[in-house]
Amino acid sequence: MPHSYGIRARTRHMFAKKFRQAGPVHMSQYLMPIKVGDYVDIFADPSIHKGMPHKFYHGRTGIVFNVTKAAVGVRVNKLVNGRIIEKRIHVRIEHVRASKCQKEILRRKKENEAAKEEARKTGTQVNLKRQPKPPKEGYFLENPGGEGAEITTIQPLPFSDLV
Image 1 (cartoon, helix red, strand yellow):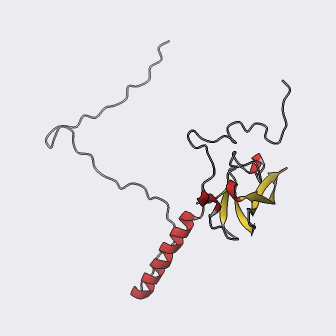
Image 2: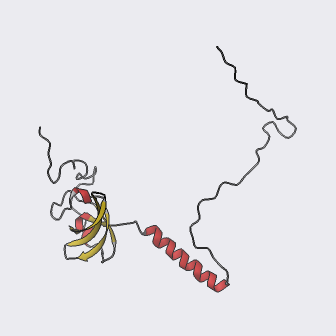
Image 3: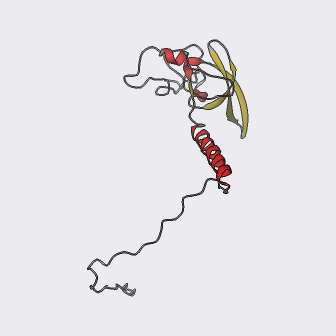
């Protein structure tokens, strides 16, 4: 058969629902609170053909710039010929879910604010920067034979040419 270049070409698994996940869209998907500036993940729901994004945007994260009654406008970055272009697309609400990409940042921000408040009360300085994981602490191995046992030192054999 000739090769296909259609709008949904090579999306056999991308636009297929997972096992035992078929059926209508849940009501909570339609009632999801989305505001301008929120981060959202674009995941096309194959059971809803209306307002479905192009396969390129499936799995991409973007920022909401517009909210209408049935859809949201999302700003997504796209790599085109070596440069990144900001694309603005409108996607129906069924094909969008709230992103968790900011979760860790917001948690750290909350912890930092609490630490700053605590430092103000106690008058101490606090380091709010993330630190890399330090190396493990050094330790001594116990002698395998017990306290009085002698430790055997092993030496490598010198190289000898067999020719």
